[in-house]
Structures are given as structure tokens and as C-alpha cells.
Length: 519
Image (cartoon, rainbow, N blue to C red; front, side, top):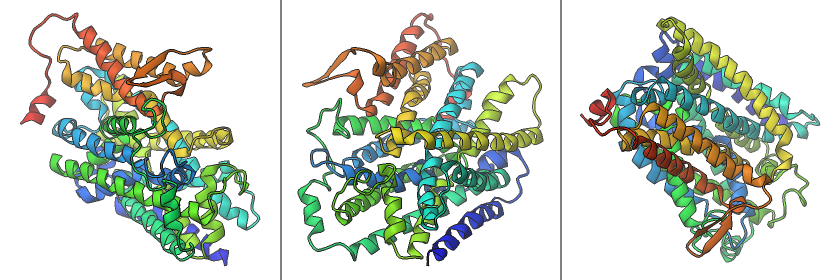
């Protein structure tokens, strides 16, 4: 009977890239390839944004957060982040989006080029490329987990590298031929698929759990949403750190990350982009709640046993995939796994290619590029980044057993290294009108070094500085990761703002994007 599941999965992996090619059509210009001539409906972009930012990490790893949560932590406290996400998106919608779209830009970093110069533009773009490669490498690896479990049911011991290679080829297929239009539409379809798959899981589990499971979950705080008692410096999801950190993280990811900004730029005007972005915040909140609830139901189904010690799984992120393969009936299992694969095929290749070509390559090339040359290079870089992404995902697969964090937390941790510097660079140019390109680059590099020290350097130090927040005290080794982005923004604004004081007073620095956005 498992052959039915396998048939559904294969049909999906072949059908979705072909559907993307058909939707994308023939790309006649680089603008069409990178931003789809700005013709995509806002609600499609909204679903695409949600799919791009959560994808497989939400489907596989968020349920594990609720499953593993202790009574002291609370099972739904991850939603505090989502509340911050909504606030962050609202700010981006009215502060940054008008400047991108009024300036008729292809990437978010073109704004930095207009404000500071090409040096800052290239610095931010290269930082985005490196960070996105690592974060999406984890996402691609996460998708290989349920496939490995399915193949094991047939006695096929496929390694992660082989599975990742197959997924990478499927993902690059429609990105290469269909451009951003194919990516956005396939994202929207795939998001609906994996949410429907989650609904199937809830429906099936509701018929399997014994009476009283909901009350037991309430007794151990599995539905607790806010954590006001844990230390805001060291807790898992304390309200202040999670809400404030989530807001700034969302401002960075949706205002300074080309993966999301590219999708928003494919809408027809500022109002459409604003509707897509703000609506996506509420959809993400509901989606997080949805998959956390699945995690609570899995906790009741397995009686809260340890996934690694008791179920003999390779890591706890395999729990949901293990349940799908071993507990769901044939047919339903294949449908849900196809939904998980749908989440993974949300492609960042177009964003990586557009940023590489327009922000980096065109800046160092001495002769101007024609539109057809830009289109050809965009496709070539799509292939190049696909190869790098496959290698990165394989390396994460080889090392994942050594880490204790859920995959989704690992991915957000990677973003924490640079998101503060990226967002800080944008805000610096808006707040301090006398800041020059040299000031911005020094502030940017300083921020990356400071945040890198906090995240990595302190791990190798014998003793670390102690910080205080009200009555809470912690050394840097135990500082919760939700403070990384706020710390980065603060350092960028502090360093850049101080450097700007050395310039003589005069007419504030303004560019044409300020005028267009305000009008």
C-alpha cells in the first residue's frame, strides 16, 4: 500500500516544476525574469511570502517546539515571536516599501546604492548572499528528512546527499525557466497544499486520541502563549525578548532580505505590496498556531516520550516525519509528505541570482550590460547558486546530529549574525542624513564583528561579560538569540550616528527615492 504514497510524491515532484514552467511562460526581459514586470496580484504574493519564510521549517520543526516544551516554558510561547512579526511588517510597509517601489528598483540593496553608493550596496548584497545560502541550506536539508523515512519503509537506505541533489534539481527547474512569476505562483499553491496536509493530520489525530488529552495538555501548560516569568535575557521565548526581537527580525527579513523583497516588488504598486506584507503577518501567526497545535496533539499521541531516546530517531526534528510515515494511512501519508516537499520547493534562487547580477556583477563590470545579457547572466547564476545550495544542505545534513536546537531555531540563528547590520544600514540612512558611505560601511562591519563575537566568540572564552536587565542577569554565553537582531541594529545606529557627527552641518543628504516616496 505504500506504493500509493510513493506515486503521489513522485507525481508531485514532477508535476510542480512543470506547472511552474507553464505559469512562468517565456521570459523576454531581465525585468520579467527578476520582478515579473510588476503584474502579480497582492494575495498571491502574500501566500508566496508566507511560503518562502516558513516552508519546511514550520511544518517539521515548529511542532517539535510545542512537543518538547516543558511546563515552565509553555507550549505556545513561540507565538510571541509571531506577534512581533506583525508589528515589524507594518513598520516596513510604511517606511521601506514606498522607497523600493517608488524608485522602480530590482533589489532592496539598490536603495542602499542610491542612498550611499555602490560600495555599501555591494557590501549588503554579498552579506545577503552568504546568509541566504546558509539559511536555505538548512531548509533544503529539512525537506530531505521525511523523504529518507519514506524510502526506509521500502528498505532503501538513501543518504541525505542523494535526496538533497534530487530536490535541488526539481527546485532549479522552474526557477531557471519560469523566473519570479513561476516562483511566486508555485509558492502560493504549495503553501495551500502543506496547510491542507496539516489539516489532514489534525483530522486523523482527533479520531485517535483518548478523551481528556486536551485537559492534560492544559495542565502542563501546552497552550500557554505568553511567558512573563522567564528571564528576558536567557529564557527560550520570554515575552519582551521574543516580541521585541521578533519585530526587528521581521523588519530585517521583510525589509532588508531580497528573498522577500523580490516577491513584494512583483506587485503593481505600493498599496498592493503593503497589503501583501501586512496580511502575511496575520497568516504567519495563524500558521504557527496551527503547527504548534499539531505538536501538542503529537505529544498526547506519543505520551510525551523522548524522540531520540525512546523512538530511536536520529534527531528530534524527525518526529513529525516519523509520525507521518509510520502512523498515517497510505494515501494520506503521501499527500502530507508531498505538502512538506511543497514547502521546501519555495525557491530563493531567483533572489540570489538577481542580487548577484544587479548588485555585484554589474557594479564591477566596466561596460554596461544589455537587457538580454542581464537575463542570460540571471539564468547562469540561478544554476550556480543551485549547486552551492545543494552542497551547503549536504554539509548541514552531515553535521546535524551534533546540535540540540530544532532546525527552525538554527535557521533563525544564522540570520541573527547579519540581519541587525542589514536592517541597521537601511535605518541609518533614513535617520541620519549626514551619514556617508564610509560611515555606513564601518558601522556595518563593526556590527557583524560585535554580533559574531556575542554568538561565537564568547563560546571559546573562559569568562564572559555579565549584563543586567532589571533584576535579570546573564553572561553573554547564555544570552537568548532573540536579542541578536536588536543588538545589531543598535550597534549600527550608534557607530554610524557617531561617525556622522564628524561631518559639517549643512543641507541633509537626500536622494530621488526620498522625494518619490514622500509624494
